[in-house]
Amino acid sequence: MKIEEKIDEKALPFLRKFMRDLESPREVRRFGSGWLSGFFALLLAIGALLLVVALRFPDWFATPELEIVKEWGGFRAVVHAILLASYALSLLSLLLRPRKGLGMVALMIGLGAALLGGANVQPEETQSWGVFFGLDFFIVNLLATGFMFAPLERFKPHRREQRLFRNEWREDLFYFLVSTMFVQILAFLTLAPSTFINDNTSSWDAFRAGVASLPWIVQFVIVLIVSDFAQYWYHRLFHKVPFLWSFHAIHHSAKSMDWLAGSRMHIIELIVLRCVTSLPLFTLGFAPSVMQAYLGFIYVWSSLLHANVGGNFNQLGHWIATPRFHHWHHGLEDEAFDVNFAIHFPWIDKLFGTFHLPEDRWPKDYGIPEDVPRNYTGQFFYPLTSTGKKIESEE
Image (cartoon, rainbow, N blue to C red):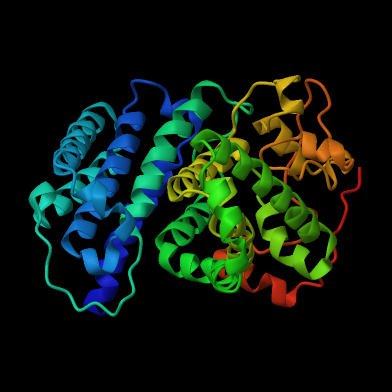
């Protein structure tokens, strides 16, 4: 038997035990069991490791737009604090929990980050080909949204029986990784249309100057409204055109709704969506800070709309998009068929007759009747093999 096979035989049982521990049922994850400390130790350890990698190899794994954050004097102190917190929580998990998988893996990852240089790591000379992967953007985004919505879904859930690590969470985490790590490639592809428009519309300069002179908050509100009108018709088109639906079906194939489910989106649709939303930002003269604020806002807003968070908000849901409003868009029932296309403002759906928000009711099930593959590779090629015909659920 080869040495590699022996190593695999020893490693696989440990990995299986680790995954079983991570995906433990709710009753085993009660407060005081050591599961929560192990989970947050793992999250912090992975975050620290990836931030250390980005600091060590900035030409390959760091986003230039975040350079100002890394140059802040307290940034390395924050990385050090994250590492210390991961050590403390992993040790607490090892003390409290009979199963040691979570705490041990978190401790090993944290030690790996320390061996790589920890918070004091220095950049290493690398051969750059002009391409980078947004590792720092991925982990900052994951930590921010994860720490924001994971506790909220635990303490104010719509579906109490739904686990944090529900079915297909690994696939959705990979979608999250793709959409954030490949930020440079996505930015290049989505900015191309706006760059072309700017280069060929010098006659718009006076209009752009007028937009730029508006107060910051007015610009931000205009961006929300204009982008939502664009997204409404883009969204509706992807539901009506069979070929486009075969791409959008990937997003709707999620059978559980939580903050991570919103990341499930075919790369082609993601690029087209970014093009649609970037056009008003980059061609009409809005301030760069407004553009940056909107892009940050939409990441958080999308996570909120898909989150497993309770609250009916019967009146508010008619004017501002809430989780229940968007959950009806993902519902499997016949009454949820082609409704609630708006992302920010439900009154846009009211204008065009697609609003649906029955008082105090949520969808019973989520997903679509089509048989969409469960893995990322299968979903990537699904539009090439699908007929594109949407199947309406039968009740």
